[in-house]
Image (cartoon, rainbow, N blue to C red):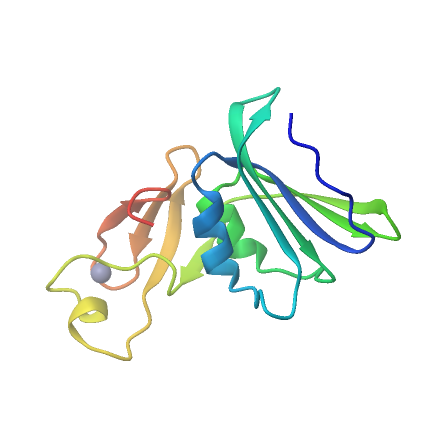
Length: 144
Ligand SMILES: [Zn+2]
């Protein structure tokens, strides 16, 4: 069991699938030089075996769209004055821009620079997204 000091204000992203924490951190693009970030890898979890966990001090506002896409089973707790003031359940976003990249070489998004990569959710149960331009299907969590 890993024990981490609690934070007075910030955000705790818990139950991240083990090995995905680094990716979450990258996408959140937190400036680690101005914010205290605690990143725990492979912590023991009662629920899912192993998990990653991230605590970010002083930030209570993160891009949950991206988070929901990378790992929608993660839990997000917003903390103020040492108390959890909000628990957020993540879901797969309907539309994502410039997070999933289209890999079809004939697609306008991959062949021309400056074209945003836009994907729309097709099926929540299979986590499938479709490219706005070429209709290629990508599964969330694969190649992300
Ligand atoms: Zn495409």
